[in-house]
Length: 357
Ligand SMILES: [Fe+2]
Image 1 (cartoon, rainbow, N blue to C red):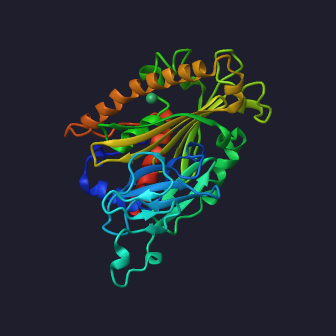
Image 2 (image 1 turned 180 degrees about the horizontal axis):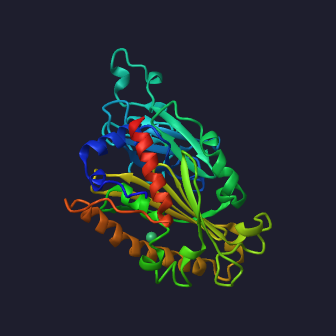
Image 3 (image 1 turned 90 degrees about the vertical axis):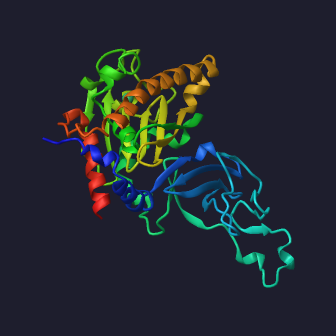
């Protein structure tokens, strides 16, 4: 029988260092969605394994990932998400174009040997998949089209790149990053933790089907029917066929990008460790355009969905933080996993592969 991870894995500083080196400095890390930075100069900001990173929309519509570190004294340049026409260092005003090229360095013209053209922000590997932006600190990372090809075959018909962003936020929770990844992919806790939200109309455990996934991802889905309370595609959505019209996919793109994809919404988390005892999660919500266009009152539709998801989060956070504390106990032991926790087991297998590579 499959078992949970050894509790020490959530707290051991040596394991944490190994995760940063072998996972977060190697794998593709989701920073957000293309639709969240639509205009040139729009940017998203995260720290991946102590490396501050920005992704910036370029004038030609492409997206670049740049080290968020000044080429002069290594000052951190930008905070949070936002918009810039150029990137200016808060220390000595070195200024960069949004493609990372240094274009201004006050007083440096009087410094012998200084050539402005020689300096730029370090460019990092950046790739996109289904409207999500990913960065890798490893220049040899395999392309996402290859890595996630099988997942594209599964969910490509949803056209989630076209879903319209309506919300995003960065939160910190007091728990190891793995506790939240596992919780999001745990199909077993809905009947208890979410009995007043996702589980309100019955045990989704009964409608859940689990699959093997691949080396780069795991997934399960919840298959509903045409009951008016079910998840469903809008009648104006003519491209989604068959059971997909009433299906919710729960996906973990390893290591820490989780997605709940439905024909009527997309909810994603991008989770990063902040030491062993704390995590940072950027979460975002998007809604298909045809649903927003048809909503009687657009803002009301968004508010209703956000109320539900804030409720779900407020149900998850205490239990995840509970685990963050309880797994520190010397009495904590490994437990048996249910068939509904298959994706938790698959995440453990990914960790084992990645950390021993
Ligand atoms: Fe949950």
